[in-house]
Length: 377
Ligand SMILES: Cc1ncc(COP(=O)(O)O)c(C=O)c1O
Image 1 (cartoon, rainbow, N blue to C red):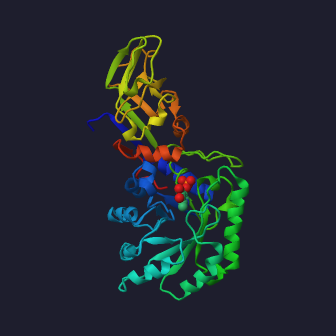
Image 2 (cartoon, protein in one colour; image 1 turned 180 degrees about the vertical axis):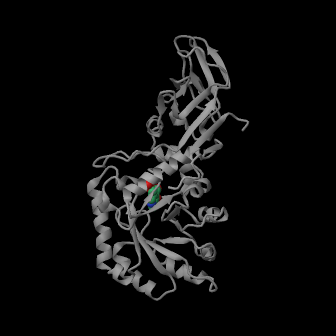
């Protein structure tokens, strides 16, 4: 590592989270959501760390993400939550990957591309219960069941997704009821008794067992972020998996009224001392954080000032006189007795913690901590 910025991925904390979440859901299956490079944590390493821990399987967004896992020796069931075009069907078959169906016409298109030497891929049918993104209309389930009954595809799962489970109990209950009603009216489970039902994401987990069904799909909680919102139960004590750090590469003194950084967007009424820190918006530290964010340096909070650029930012160290080149700067995570959380960053950047997590994944090299690799979960 020659540029002094990195993220630390604490696989011990990941396993701790998985352990307590599994205890929390009991006999219900737990799909670990590792799409988008495991929310910026590294999907291969995350999957390797948990694949033998009795998880139900892994959820990804695309066939490409699924194949990357298979090529890295990940053996557990993988469910693609997004679309796969018909040309991808032989790869689904070859790599034994389970595919989401969200338009009834998928079956016909996929059927034409099947490799007749291999079993058809397993299918999880997604129903639209209110998010209006992916999912077949509940009313189309009866016809879809008839299509499935003709073969060769088998629906091994049926699911939906909550879009306001953290904020809106009425709408979330309505989605759950639509899901149940759709199954009942289409007599889906009578026709496909082994079909696995799942709908809950992290915030729904904190609503209670009536939302769990046969399995839950968890990302946010697994990576140690705590959903907050109305009517959620107390969150189990998950620990953050990602932290982000850098080192001071230089210090500058700015005179009263002098500009600095792109656009001279900030000027001070007194001289200031600034530390130059090598992390910028290309590392996921988005420009929107300009003017509100803080970092930890020598165990103290210091404000990020001036414009955040592609590879660097400025920290006002006027109140921390002993800062030296090489000092560790914590962008996300704990230093001393203080901590910058993902929620802090999201609020400062006027975004959501999910986006911050994914953004950090792109450039800072990852260091993995995995001391309890021999412990069983
Ligand atoms: C379809 C689907 N299921 C489950 C999840 C996991 O959600 P969470 O990270 O809130 O647990 C996501 C995440 O975006 C998703 O898109």
